[in-house]
Amino acid sequence: MSRLHGTKDFWIGALRAEGPAFAAAVAEAPPETPVLSCPGWTVADLTLHLAAIYRWVRSFAGAGAASRPPGRPERIEPEAGVAPLRLWQQEYDQLMALFDALDPEAPAWNWAPQPKKAGFWPRRMAHETAVHRWDAQLAIAAGEPVEAKLAADGVSEVLDTWLPAGRRRTAGQWHGVVQLSAVDAAQQWFLRLRGEGVALLDTATIFDHDDHHARAQVSGTASDLLLALWGRVSFDTLDVAGDPTLLEGLRVG
Image (cartoon, rainbow, N blue to C red; front, side, top):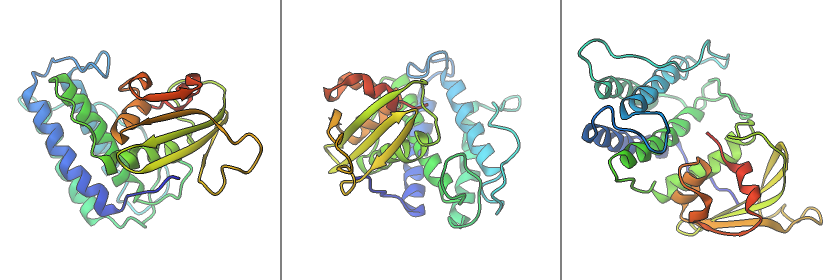
């Protein structure tokens, strides 16, 4: 079943590891270096994108209100003479200061069908940063895996947040149960696809009607599962059995 590893401290700890790793990769690459996992983007684009998301989240996550913020993340440009990485570092430092003081139970808007609480955002930013850290490292031919517990929670986030919010990469109709197994995290997930809808199941409910057998099974490391769900690696790189066409209904981003 799906188990959240996360608490505010867990996600902030992940950000404290993933943020500097992202910065180190960016510092090693010329700004115009292509980001192969984000076609059309350079390392500078990736850096400014993440900085913009941090700034956008800071604009409302600590305001103590659940109302929808105006606007969306927009690319920000550094002032003359300021490198993209320096701007990113400023935004990262301010985001971490906000999160350190944040009450995760305080009201805060989010775009998911979940309680509108501030704790949503440290989790979201931890995974946003981890995946983009992998992107940045791939640009310098590195690409270290996402730590297993963080990656397992990232898989859960895709299944309990992104897919129920309708944020699939491709629109379509899929029907059947998919089983995902993270071999290095002793964790598995069952997801029933219902056309455009989804239902994340636990082991106590997967036998609630006759069509309970998983039509597709995928196993691999938690990091590879997460990266496949985000379209960074192909599901073909994992151990797949059953109907692989269902897996396109799990991709987000």
